[in-house]
Image 1 (tube, helix red, strand yellow):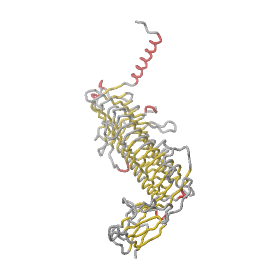
Image 2 (cartoon, helix red, strand yellow):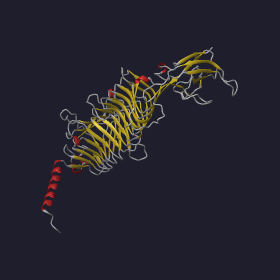
Image 3 (cartoon, one colour):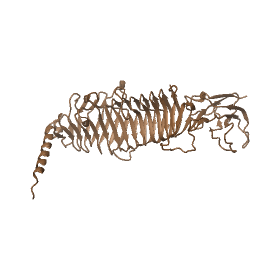
Length: 529
């Protein structure tokens, strides 16, 4: 056989020396391969030595290692690696237990931290001064399951993953936790401190085994944030994102991209985050969330949007809907510089209340959109409409840019016959209606009168709804419609014309806005003769 060139032999020798030097500095210590055991027991480890601060601890396949130490003030190991089908778990009932890793945590098996006992206090700390080593990686087939004890006093958490490395100059040390395709991440009632969490490509429908994306009841503090990409049906609920003690955090406290049927509910975002909640190219719902002190509160960009019961407080832009279809209901936007903005959107906004609005400035910016306002306290002069030919147009040219509607609750007093109805018609329609045609300005008319003499409340399926005004793309408001209200007695015979008991002429005004839609207080009272 031909001899190798001299320079090749030198390279091989060099690489051999490099490998030897690396392994000399940090040994790889494997669990025993016989089932594992407690971390502090020498019998748990091959060679009879417990991993030290400079060693890489490897949990072997089919071993279960129970962590039973408190290393809050010193590194437990250099790196922690879980082989496929291995298990690493914190031992409960022992009080304070802290694993401190001076490098990477890499999970191909499962890591469990279940702090359910009254005395449990469990933590994982990443303390490396090298930014690239402050990483928590859940690889294909791996699982991270953290569950703290719920409802502890003063918002305390007894299960934590945190970065404890010193500041880098004036910059706070932060790290990353990533969960990749075909993995499991289940975080409940835990605290994540200065940790950017990213989940990608996880199916949470239950159709695929050993995949889960569930983030509920956690505290994301400092520079922590959550990003979920291309996950099916992820659940992000009842978390608190608190960045009040750090500078601006980018890009968002909670970022959702390309996730079908995402469920985002009852989260609290306390800025400053560049965006509180950002949803892009996703179909799902955001309900019961609270966002405060962010340059942008909630931004939904592309896809069907369903928002309900959200509150946005002290943000520069409150709610931004861009290239979306869908609805926002029961939303409060308080003390925001620009409460609402739509761009190439086709949406219905129902009971969107703007409180402490900006002075001498618009409440809503709109570009190439079709917006229906139902029971919103917005007037035409508070909307600024602009044209932008560069935006994709998802609304048809014939669609009205802005139409406003109000709920109408009528209370009848006096001698109200059983079976009475309230009928509402446009007094002078722009286009005369043919016999039997539905009035486009009125919905659910005639409305049946209930036993208490009132028409149905907005919470029912059949409330009276009337159009109050409309605006074109140039910001010009049309005339306010006028209506004829008839109180009808039940017809005596089938096919007979109902008797009109009373007629009232109406013209909508801003007092028709119902801050509490289902409050029984009527919009209008009518006394029958």
